[in-house]
Image 1 (cartoon, helix red, strand yellow):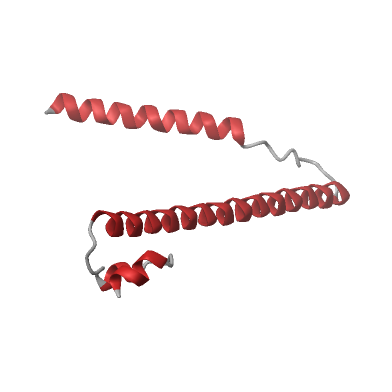
Image 2 (cartoon, one colour):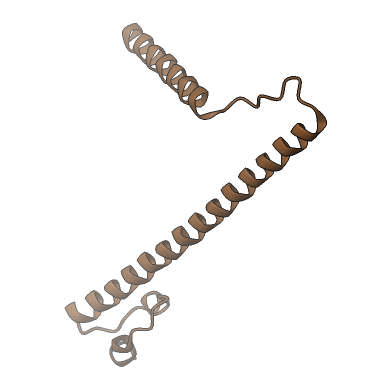
Amino acid sequence: MLQADEKRRKSKERLEEEKRAILKQRIRPLDIDGADAARLVDKAKELLNLITRLESEKYDLEKSYKARQMEVSVGLGASVCVIVVSVKKVKVPYAMRSVNVRCSVLEHVGG
């Protein structure tokens, strides 16, 4: 039991060290020591442009992710409709009729 706890603690410490090393590589220094007002303004504009670009990319990625999620859920809903209708010619439960996809087969079978 003690060995497992020690192993877990060491792996957590190793993960923290790896995280710190990665962050150190990704985070660039500001280099603003002794800078005049004009240089500080330029640096602020540069950072603002970077933030704007990253936020825009994030928005685009979130939007495409949601669109793909919708495609998958609609595709799965249609597949479920087709499978249920093609396997058994029975009345389709009300819950199945509320799938986002209009199944023309359901209209005829489910009545």
